[in-house]
Image 1 (spheres, rainbow, N blue to C red):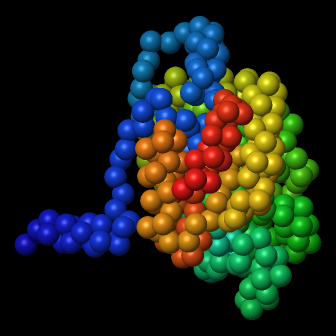
Image 2: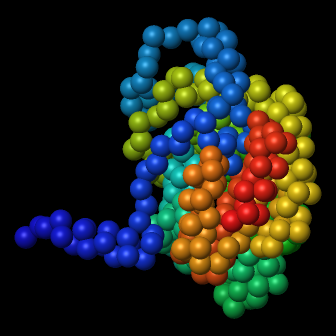
Length: 375
């Protein structure tokens, strides 16, 4: 007989471990050092202004899409934007997904075949891991940004007549550091491996006009697939996988999250289009990287600060209780700074995850430094 007691027991267990999650509304007066809205496209209403103009160019009364892309949900607009995405990211083709999670879940559950090999950096996002769980391929993790460990793990497997996928994020969401893309691309090219790069936290930030770190490293043509997301620096929603036309057609036929999901409505598609138009402007990026430099200079001697040149700055404070207490104290002082606890990160590497934005001020950064220093 069904009973909710088992569910309650699991929640109680998580609560006793100090790991119970809950939703929190953040007062607008709090200083944002938490969101992924790195360029302020969302918070500052920048995207909304451009979206309003683009919406006039694409007048339609529709609100929802009407179905999945393979039924009634396809549109000339979706195909037009996919062509723009592909051109912007120097790819043969691109396919839009409802979220970055959907894109990764769909790709990794559908593309690697039975007995294929996936080698992934130990710090890749949960969406990649969940996709691999649904795959018939064999997956192995390697130490973070450690090419020696990657090569060693591969050497232990029989790679003849098996496709090998190497999976990394260009910018890692918890540490904020970069993958060694050039070395990885050369290694994959030399050995005939498929390099897959998730550009979620690089889209809109790095490379020419925000094309990403793959563009900045000049390895776009060496990647089998690249994931770009629009809910972070781009201030919108959704994601896209860029690659060959063959990959595009395969995903349309075999990727279940794409096939069976109602597609994005017109307003969401237009928001993506607006975000790419804004991405060609440098003003907000310049403000952001000025703030990153200021933060690093201010916090350079701070114990536990991890090296990062991205908007994601992490201060390691071991212990779930300890890091949560500091986060709560900062919240009471008017700062939105989140604690990231184990097992999300390794035990002993719990941290404050500080996200910087173009709209953060010098005063706010200095105030945060003072507040953390006094705890």
